[in-house]
Image (cartoon, rainbow, N blue to C red; front, side, top):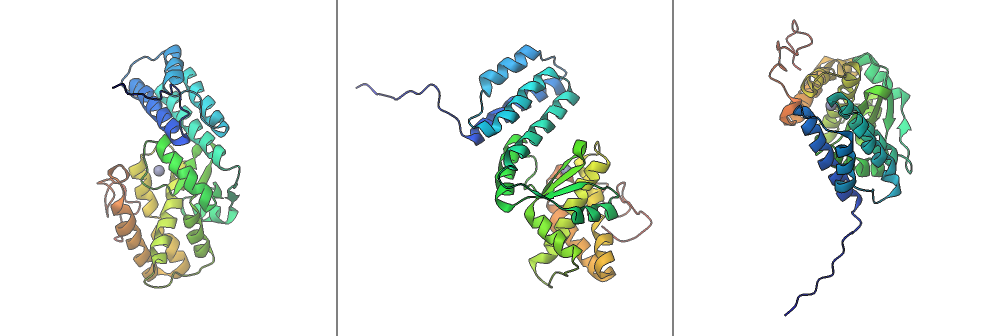
Length: 271
Ligand SMILES: [Zn+2]
């Protein structure tokens, strides 16, 4: 008996498959550079062509070009910059159809907490869902669920639409109704925006330090709107429901009352 197989040497990959190939290739190069190995430009480009190849869709062409161009800057810093360029290209591939809206009003919150004046963009739900799914592939599942992104070179923050909605209610001083999910949404939204703004302020700070500073902005922001006792409640939500459930790389032993990352060591309130 002879089995008959249809053999197709080249099946066009889906966007997700192609992005996974890119991620594996990029990780490999990054690991070599981190390990102190020298990678030649030719090897880098040849492996890109063999292992990643042309993108399945025209809209990923710019991302593909950006990624391959990274082979011209083969240092650890150069590679990181190239990976950031890839994320920027991915955003550009997604923000054409449903462009995100600039929100100057939300930028004022980052200004009053962190002291930064970023450009803030809010995405439409469909576009954000599609973008964040592909972002997770490109970054190897780095952030469990993407709520916001900071681009330090453009001083720009892009936000999940749910985060934007909660920040909008905060600005309008629409207090969350008691015992609803809105309490948690407010806590989360204020810490997400503060987290991204902290990235712009201190681009080389670790995720753990950035997140620890961010969670400490929740109390003063809520205090400004609704006073001390509600601020205490929401700060605890930010701590218990958000901070303590983050992956380990976002947390630190120094992030505690009187710890290394306590912004107000003389004050006995935490966070
Ligand atoms: Zn971060």
